[in-house]
Amino acid sequence: MKYGRVFNFSAGPAMMPEPVLEEIRDEMMNYRGSGMCVMEMSHRSKVYQQIIDEAEQDLRDLMGIPDNYKVLFIQGGATLQFSMIPMNLMKNGKAVYIETGAWSKKAIAEAKKVGEVIVGASSKDKNYTYIPDCSNLDIPSDTDYVYICENETIHGVTWNKLPNTKGHVLVSDQSSMFLSRPCNVSDYGLIYAGVQKNVGPAGMVVVIIREDLIRDDLENLPIYLQYKTHADNGSMYNTPNCWAIYCCGKVFKYLKSLGGLKKMEEINKDKAKVFYDFLDQSKMFKGTVVPQDRSLMNIPFVTGSAELDAEVVAATKAAGYDNLKGHKSVGGLRASIYNAMPKEGVVALVDFLKKFEAEHK
Ligand SMILES: *Cc1c(COP(=O)(O)O)cnc(C)c1O
Image (cartoon, rainbow, N blue to C red):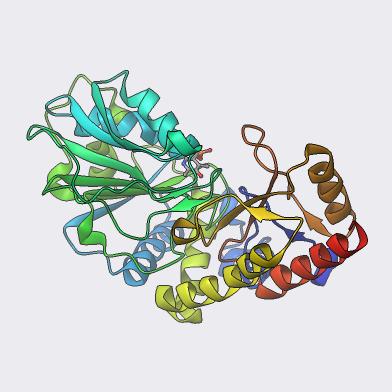
């Protein structure tokens, strides 16, 4: 790795593509002849308007977002969406949530403060190590939406087949798998993603919402919490996270140049296979998720001994593989291998773990 950088397996904020960081560096002191850094620029300037317009257009191109969907850049991270979604979409005050891990659990807790939450299915019985069968959910007819977390960052499970919502609106938290594979946007009413996992710097969420779900009868909801405010003002009702939008825009362009989301899926499958193949033959390390629901992005694994886990974390860190400690709520180990993690990083880590295993027999 150049610049003395390490292979960073953090779950987020996480690695960004090196060519993107280099471009940002090159534009740092004087953005394209403007005489200033993007951080110093008025969000109402022509130069900045072009940056945000291009970012939106590149994202639309990448995902093939239909014209009847708005793209919003909102602050408050993915967490604020746990509240904004029920506040804006619960017309009848009722929604079905699927509980598949820590992040859907958090979303459920917030939605309960707004209306009635029906947990349509849960994988709690097996510690969130699989995606429950959602082909025939019991969904009341006045349900406003069905909610999933499409990739559970902490538990490492991913939806490979969307739930059968029986015609109801589907809402998805794509934070830790955004832009990692093709996505048919019209299958959803609302998609959102905190960008610090798979795209850019922290502090912003991208919301893709079907226009007919944006309501104008919510005058009593604080103005910043209404999707309408952000939609009507091109994500600039107030000062947006200018820097994050600029950096994300660069990542969108970079993913386009690599060949788009189909190509990203190929790359990500190939990369994750290296790690899962290793886990499946190892006698020391074990993956915690059932094979068919394994995430391509976040790979939790364990040795079965907390002391040995800690030893692995220390040894890998010393060797230049950082942030392999599992989330504090589940322990063990976790390798997050988002779009920006090069395959060579995964191969090198696997080689290191193989050696570690051989030396600790
Ligand atoms: C990280 C994460 C969140 C929370 O993101 P913040 O930007 O920190 O609010 C929500 N959902 C998922 C799936 C995440 O990985």
